[in-house]
Each structure stands twice: as structure tokens, then as C-alpha cells.
Length: 80
Image 1 (cartoon, rainbow, N blue to C red):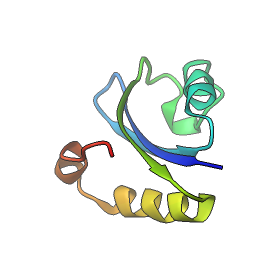
Image 2 (tube, rainbow, N blue to C red):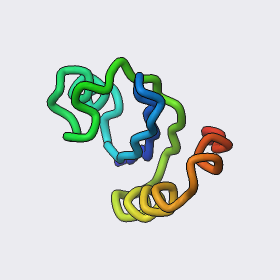
Image 3 (cartoon, rainbow, N blue to C red):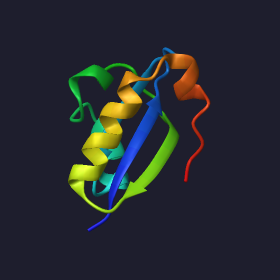
Image 4 (cartoon, rainbow, N blue to C red):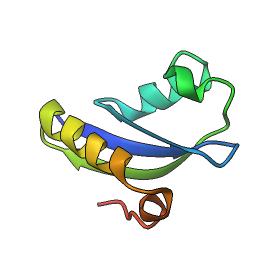
């Protein structure tokens, strides 16, 4: 199963990083207010970055790496 690390750019300009194995479903959940608590009321969203990972473990580790980056560094990420 492929996992995806993704970064959303929220309507207020903030960035949200998460992981999923079904990006379309997860984005729908965010849009419906059923995703992460942080994203509620911050839509609409733009998928700013996404990266495929071979396992949940790898995706979780990569998510933490991205979350530790400064905003400027996150904005320089390029999708793989």
C-alpha cells in the first residue's frame, strides 16, 4: 500500500502537513470539516506538496521531518 505525505496551503496562508493512504478521500474529509481539527474553518485548501512513501512508518517519519522545517523551507519543497 502506498502512503502519501501532503502539505495543504490553507486559505489563511498557513500550511498543514499530514499523511494518508487515500489523498482524495482525505482532502474531501478536510473540506467537509471531518479532517484534522486544525483545518476546520481554514478552507478552501490547495494541495501544495505531496510525496509517495512505501509504508506508513516511512510516511510518518517524513511527516515529522517536514513539520520540523521552517515555513520558508516548506515553501521550497517540490513534489516527487
